[in-house]
Image 1 (cartoon, rainbow, N blue to C red):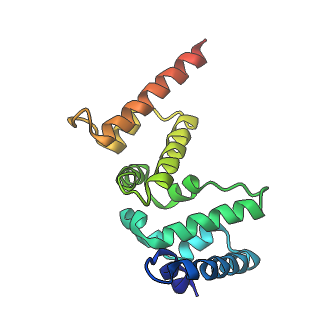
Image 2 (cartoon, rainbow, N blue to C red):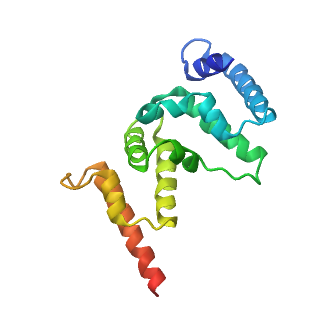
Length: 170
């Protein structure tokens, strides 16, 4: 059922609109079965073999299924707050995750979720008070052009970090 749901959800062309209702129904059943079976988002991540994809994770059509299940799980289990970024960080290093999100932001179909996840990643670094030097090492910005996506992400973080530290010193 999973392969049908994934294939149908990414297919286009004649009949795609008619299949949409069936796909949503099947996906809902699948999510309900996972939830009733006690599958957490972390468990489904492994079940879908997403933990084996490394930096190709963002290219997998199964990632969207997992992200949607994570939202479903969070809705069904509000006391068991899970964030997509915290689960991704368990399986992918911050440097690799940053790179994947920068690449995904350049693709129209993944731009929205990649932007959200990138903002969540920056927030998690801020919460953990990661020093800009650490972030610089993950993003490999030394010697890159000023319009380089890694450098722009680093500068956004470094400026936010500086502002946060100034606020804390007051």
